[in-house]
Length: 51
Image: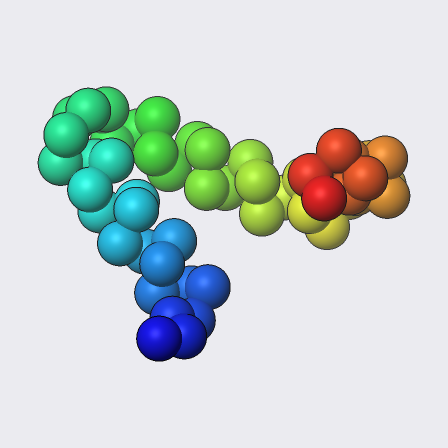
């Protein structure tokens, strides 16, 4: 069975929020920080670390 990556990440994220219960501001900061970092000058430096 093939599952789209976005669906798998969404499920893992929902389970993580339900089990760990981090504050919502921390989730927002991580999402916004990741989005801004992916579109910055540091993206080519970070990209090999992720793969």
